[in-house]
Length: 445
Ligand code: NIG
Ligand code: FE
Image 1 (cartoon, rainbow, N blue to C red):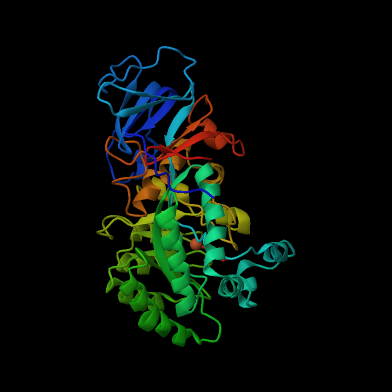
Image 2 (spheres, helix red, strand yellow):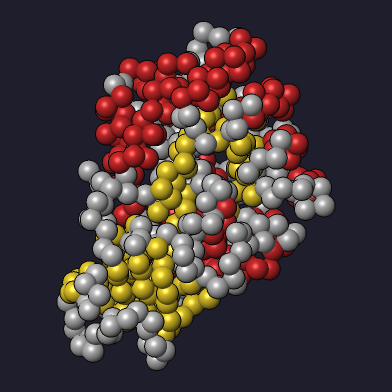
C-alpha cells in the first residue's frame, strides 16, 4: 500500500530535464487566453529544498545552490545521493532528458466507495440511462447499501488502492467527497476514512461533505433534507471532518431551493460550497453556486449561455471555477461540458476526474486531459493548466500546489523523453510517467 514518505531529502537536484513546465506567472488561476500560456524550459534543472521548489533554470545558467555541482557524467546513476559542504544531504536525480511537470490536481472525486458497479455498466449498454438506473434504486443508493455493509478498515483499504493508482498516474492533490453514506453514521464513517487517507497517503487530500448526494433509503425528500441540515452538518462541523460542502443540485436529486438551505447550514460551520450542477438537466445549479459564493461549480454538461454570463466577474464578485468532468461524459456517453466556450468567454476552467463507481470508475488525469483536448477542443496547454493550477484553485490550494513556482510544494513527475508537451494528450493511452515526487520525496511506485 502506498504510504506517506517519511524520509524527505533536505535538498534534491534534478538535472538533464528535457522539458520543465514552470510557473513564472504567479497567478492563483488562469482564465481565458491566459490558459494557453505555458512556460517550458529546455535542458533544465530543478532544485528542491525541504519539500518545496527552491529554484530552477537551464543548464547554461548558473545553479544557485552552493556547491551543488551539476553532474558532468551523463550516465550518473538515477538516484545518486551525496553530502555537500554544508553537510545537508543533497540528492541528485538525472532525468536523462525526460520532462518534469507539476503533479495533476484532481479537484472532484468520490473515490471512497465499496466494491464496484459493473452490472449498471452493462445495463447502460443495454439501453438504460444513468437517470433511469437511479430511479430504479440503483446508482448512488446501490453504493450506499454496499458501503453500509462494509467495515471502515476495508473501505479504507479499497480507497487506498485507488489512491495508489492515481498517485502512479501523476496526481499529487485530490478532493474526495462523502455521499455514499446517506445516513448520519455512514456519512461520518466515510469522512473518517477520508481523514485517515489524508493522514497516511503521500498526496494532499481535501474533504467534501456531500450528504445531499441522493435521498437516503427510508426518508422522504423533505425528511432527508432536514436530516442533512439538522444532524449531519452540525456533527461534521463539530468533528471538523470536512473542508467543503457539496450538493447534487439536479433534476431528480435536490432542487436549487433545497440546495440553498443546505449551503446556508454549511456556511454556519465555515464549509465553502463546491456544487454538482447542470449535469442531467438545466436545473439552476450555476445560479445557486453564484448566490452562495461557491469555490467551484462542477459537471456543467447541460450548461447554458446564461450560466456562462452568470459566472463573469461582473456578475460574480468571487471567482467560481467552472469545472468540467470529461471522463463522466465519456463513460456515460453524454454531451461534454462546453469547455471551449467557457475559456473563449474569458473564464477559468478546471478539469477533474470525478472518479466514482457509477459515472466514471477512473482517476486517470492524463486521459482526462486527452478527453478535454479531443472532445472539448482545448489546446494541450489549456488542458494541462486546467488539470493543474486551475484544479488546485478549485480546491483552494493554488498558493501551494498546481504549478512549479519557487516556494510551492514540490509535487511533480518525471516522464520518458517527450518531443513536446503536446505529445502528452496525443499519446492518450501511453504510460509516460517514470518517477513521482510528492513534497520533494520520491514515491515508491
Ligand atoms: O458526480 N452526479 C452525481 N454523482 C456522481 C456519480 C455518483 C454515482 O453514480 O455513484 C457524479 O457523477
Ligand atoms: Fe461527482
